[in-house]
Length: 381
Image (cartoon, rainbow, N blue to C red; front, side, top):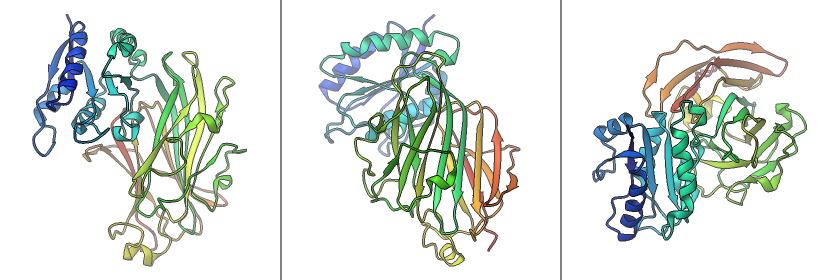
């Protein structure tokens, strides 16, 4: 009996698009029973019926083609349906027309790998498509080539200094699950107060893991590889759209790729990266009350991270400089990406050191599609 696959594609009345979609349909119909949705409503929202159809099928197939009304834009709802499928933890085959920029794919490149194709000749991508189809039949999700790696541990740390400077630091232990693995992509969000025109200055020679070594006056992105079977990461292997600068002043964040090249299945990569920025958090009561650094006035401060990949062990740490005036006891809130709160029993444990007041919480195995929000009410209020 064939597996079922939900296929998402553009409904634009363009002969080139129709031709490409029909060719892919003919190929996938040999392996799956194809289910398709309907063209979205005028507000481009995805109906509950379509969401239910995605949930019920075994596999998601998305065909991302360029739009007629934009030189290299793409169909937003196809990407939204792909993210919904990812939240249901479905095997995903995403085909993206060559020429579409990665930034136009939203956060999807940070979630899963995708396959590029030439609309004039799709034959070039067929061998990889067939390898993915073959591996979908394997029972272990770790053998699904759409998901070629797994995080064994992620430690996410935020350090806040007395002048409002924030340092995000993330340490990852990754296991290679597929011979197709070559890189991993990460995204980092920026708060409304972050200077968005500053050139990012990369640090690729961090000598220690001490947070103080990453305290700089400039806005900086930094990384270090501790273990990778002799592979060393250098500036040429770390990509950020070939430039170390935010794509536009309205950007809510940025993404970058760590390219490790081919590694044997089972290889362990231990690496760290982070982001340092001045004025990331308010540092006195007046700033907080006036909302100078936040879009809305609030009596609470917060930060959050999204889990886009499966993680065996997630640790969240927030540490305040003892002189930071707005520190407080943090609370952990877990929601779906749509904002629905989930009940849990996780609580932060407090530790004191010479320089920091530290809170940490350890979470077991996590699945994609959850948001972890750290929120605290400043003691000064």
